[in-house]
Length: 94
Image (cartoon, rainbow, N blue to C red):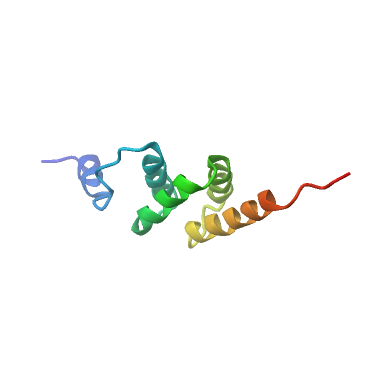
């Protein structure tokens, strides 16, 4: 008889990508699983490839505060958009 933990581990992420050769791919999978949005692995891999890491980590940290959110992915994308907008503003001259 198998233990419950072993059965859960076998079925938890069946659709997880198998051939992860680059670091950004692994981070993309980490983002998708942290946000409970495993249907969109490729989106998070693309974000991990083209977006500065500090912005992704800050948006993820912000999102983790919303424990009862219906869609953590939506909050993550909203926060990431805010952070990108802030980082694209020209610096004040003074």
